[in-house]
Image (cartoon, rainbow over all chains, first blue to last red):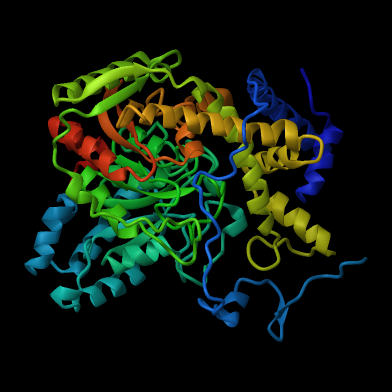
Length: 96
Length: 486
């Protein structure tokens, strides 16, 4: 059974900003098919009246005073940036 | 040689000033240099930083010395360390140096420990063999042709090989417990919220927990006491008071009520593993525990549920890696979109890309309800299953892994075998409850782990049971061939 076509994979890969040439897309189609078939098992269960669980603990909003803490050093952070100028990060043109 | 001593032996030598922290640190670094040639657990060894930290500790007066004073520790490389490269075993973060300290490592240092390096793992903690590391293959100290498990394989192998007595790993679906089982050491996955996740590079945010790996239950209890507790940097870190977990190591488990899910010893579990675990359950009974078989009906749905939820959360969490602010940056990219595409395609390994893709699909319009929301509902059923058992029982016991350590290269070919193994570990993360793995014997000469699962915030109970079992057996005293020769 095949659920994913090469084109499907390329469609979803684009959302995740992952480059997906044809050969790769075919490989990933097979792998995702396996995962999706695996998830079919969940359809055996009747979940009509079950509440979805979003988090393991029942925590209500945790608030604190709006005071700045852990202020990070800009120069330290810029060390990991490829290209920057005057404390700002440089990127190539957004429009060609 | 000092590195073959136990943590408490080393601590008394340090307190009587017969041994300095600097001497212990130097000996540890030397051991790592020798043993890691074959084990390859460490991605980064922080020699100069460790020596400098040791010298500072040696100057501390007695009343300022923390609970784990002078103890060397290795940290899984997805837990950030200020000024020390943190790669997540990914090309994406090959040169990433964090600008702040994670809470767990900050507390490790506050307790007097010396960080000696960063440990190998499956890339971004996605995997169960550590073979998905972008950098190196870590070997199981019990048999060099076997994997150490994963994703915290480096953390477990380094402790098993005697390179360090303590390490930190992280557990999203079994990544502390399974490598601990494969390497014959003790690994604890605490309750979700017991340890702050600030500084842990996020994989599945509703599942991730940092956990200690050690050779003994007592050491493990001490390390968890040191790192656990509320943290203003992580709103999900619980305000619940953290006990000194050592106080629960009484050895007394008379009257303890143990549940053994039939499924945990059922089909797919290796006969020798089953035998070892059954014997372990017999030991617990002989110590006065009462054992019943129970049914955890929904556990067979845990692995597919886990793959949907963890991949969905990962696809969202890993969106931050865009090649701009930090991380892999492709050369000569012509426009912004090309930076995104190339940094993520060239920076992430195949397993990571697969899970991001699956998660993106699961969250996309048209599939969200059928896949992601359905998984969240099944998650509720799995969590309720546990709650029903804990109404009548103190702990749940079973194997940590269905098999012993896989052969290197064996597993990648058959992902479904790996997924089947996840039945034993992933339900715990989905429910957010704690579980510990302790050595309970051997299958084909390789260690087997006994998993003890408890209710939310019942780590003290798990340590009590694990310690009682450990003291009644000799398995924790057996060491792998790779540890000998000192």
